[in-house]
Length: 171
Image (cartoon, rainbow, N blue to C red):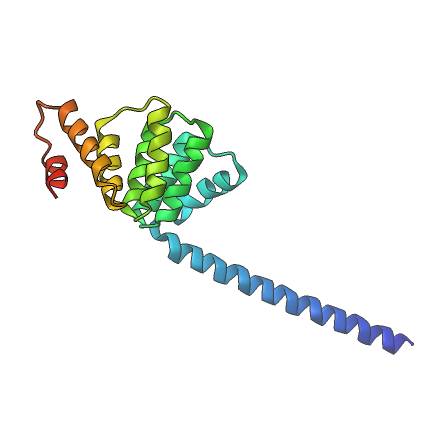
């Protein structure tokens, strides 16, 4: 009987040791992947992303996440950071413009238009947002609306030659 208990104990101990080894390997691989994934931002991004996931990140944290994500060309990460800023403050016009621009640049034109619709309805009125909206409308082949927005962007700053707006409008 005692020999049987000894064998059961050894089996359980062996299983625990194997489980510990597997878990240690998984954590090491995950850590290496995280380091590779974030490169020089590894130590900075970890607490920021943890704060974002737990809902404890403030605007500055989220905007820094978006900057890092942009630098690392992680568009979805960048979009999610801007969206989290807007969850905290729906009238954060800077974050809304940056979100719409990121959405537009990544081919999410309808999402950009939805973001800008909310932006304009909540009081945003920058020429840059008009320009992004015009480009997004043109991308979804709503050319009449795009033309109106290009004209408005040009008229709002007549004293400044807006080469890129005019160039896109002519296209």
